[in-house]
Image (tube, helix red, strand yellow):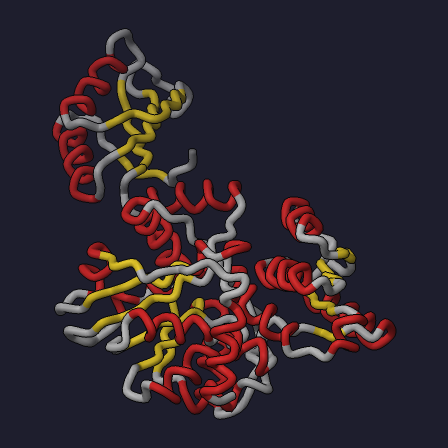
Length: 404
């Protein structure tokens, strides 16, 4: 990978990509603190909802006419599938996507709608990938790897080209890492042209394969991964691209799942944008930075999140921020008691979402029945104030696990 290839890739991907201009964020700048200015590179707004189209399109552009005539194949249940399908359609090239049988139907249909042939095989990605390699060998397809390919990584590096074209004096770029293709492209181009710009790779805490490999000085495979950031839940970084990562990554940060949940709420409420959990890694890592007066760019890599996952993340985010909580109170089983406790809560501007009444918490119902109240609050301070008032009124409040 050299500057000429990055220039070629940047020009080539313009044929299909949307112009994702940098967005300045007051909110995330405040989280970074110390005079830092944070800008978002919103690839969640990219065509197909993620950056993956860049690498796929550049990779196919580099194929010979004979290779294009035979078609391409890959294995993916996510953004890479749609990126390859879209890119192949633009070139008039046959695309075969092998997906695990467990892939949600909406993702299968989206990929088919882009003109690809979908083969459902195996229960997990590894089995689908093995099948894709088998078909590539038997049918003569070119395998388009999701990350461990120099052409693919060069295509992803067009993101950095655009960042510096728009903001030449960028001091730091935070980039999410799964297998490392995006980080390879962004970091390699950056160090070629702007060697003083710091590149920070960000991984899920439960799938930190790059950090483990860099610490060991060789590619390692994690025994297992566990994270809600499914797009970056990778056990092994790319072997072909690993030397680039070793050379060009300045630092690796890891992010726990609960920080991704909070970051989702932050992004929705402050920027009105949907970003998938993997795409939120970079903004979730901002509070870990120790720098001052820097211009920082966070790559938001994708925004493809299904509605069921989205609703779960919103709920958990509200709970983590103490904006929803459930409290158990004891009160005598007689008329008017519910109205009294409701009045106490209303007096503190608490909003009741759900009530559960349990008359069998005690054998003496006149002494006490249990009322579980799920409340909406403004945050921790407001929650604590409501609990204090309930305690003062003699209701003996106890926080219980919240479910909606």
